[in-house]
Image (cartoon, rainbow, N blue to C red; front, side):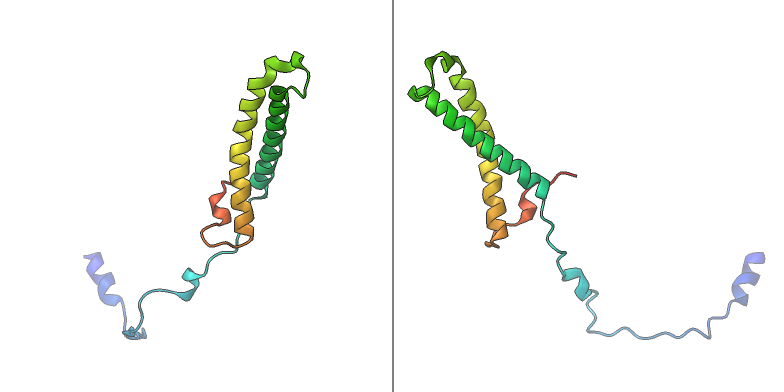
Length: 117
C-alpha cells in the first residue's frame, strides 16, 4: 500500500528530453587517439648489457678456441661460448627491435619489448 502512494507522488513533467540524432554512432573521437609512447628504459638497458656481455664472452671463447689465449684455460671454452650465445641472442634481438622502433620503422614498436614494473 505504501509503495503505490510513493509512485503516484512522483512528478516527471518538469524533465527535459532530447531526441537522439540519427548520425550518432556511439563513438567518441578521443577513444581513437593513441596514448603517448612509453619507452621501456630498464628493458633496453638490460638488453644492452646482455648484448655487450654476450659479445665479450663469445669473443673470449673464440680466442680460447683459436689458441690466442693460453691453453690452460681450455676447460672454460664451451661454458664461455654457450653462456655468451645465451646472452648475445636475446640481447641482440631486443636491441634490434629498440633501434628499429626508435627509427619508427613500420611494424616495430616499443610495445614489442617487455617492460619491468
